Length: 359
Ligand SMILES: [Ca+2]
Ligand SMILES: [Ca+2]
Image 1 (cartoon, helix red, strand yellow):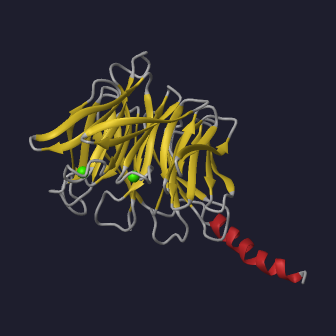
Image 2 (tube, protein in one colour; image 1 turned 120 degrees about the horizontal axis):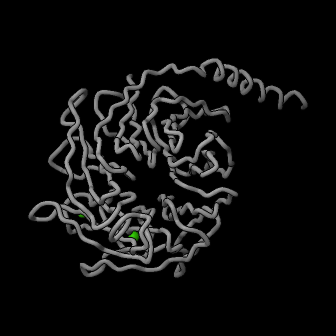
Image 3 (cartoon, helix red, strand yellow; image 1 turned 45 degrees about the vertical axis):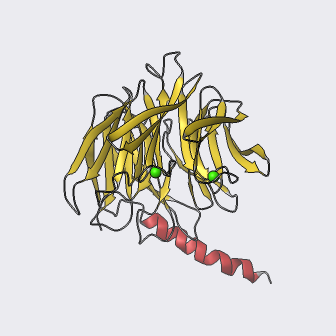
């Protein structure tokens, strides 16, 4: 009976050694600057916004309120094209794609930040809806709050209401649900937070809200009531959160990138000396049997991590260093001609980066 655990341990040990021997970069990454603006590029999102083009679009938002769309103009090595599609009244922090208005064709883009001025001003925060109207792209302010809106996500959060809703949070320490009713956008206060809300991710039918007091809250509708449950707690501010199936990834000011498995196991998978502003999960490398992750932050380095199916260790690789701090990272399919998804990142340099594994 004693031999059994050792037999189980052995493959894990061998696998650990194999993983360690391949620590050095073994993959060739192509890193492209697909857009360069003069202002801080605070956030980005990927979706198929324009039904007329075959490739998905990357939306990005900057500190002057500009909203850009960037896409590859064709398959494989075709050049990237960008255009400014709308401008908000104030600094924008982030954006998300989703079909939040079924009466309008295709996906809509939700962008959030300030009603006027920069994030450092004492002005109200705002949420904007960018959609395809009959006369081109339209932008509409659909919600404002007492302070900066810093996080948002789209999902089927309100299971009693048909279709998708928007959840936003920010420096007012509140979480709001935004929904369309009789052609009007309505806000509903779901909960108060003990810290400022920094980032929101869709987690099945609930939302995870990363807060600067170290709490990661789960906001969920249970029957007639909205509940706010403590999902994770840290000494350090939580900065960005992402989900993949039942798994969660959250970055913190203390430089740690934290993985919470679908079974609830917690693991620090990366540590930086600098604050992190990126948590992304996806499928970057089809030949790696586990999931992949990406992060970046004030250390200006864009890091890719490879999960191992049987081993708890993740390997990491620095694939790019920018001239200034990163502010957002995601993983999505944006480029043809290769297998797997790509890393999309942006930050204070004003650059929008697409990194693809050459394979
Ligand atoms: Ca729509
Ligand atoms: Ca719903």
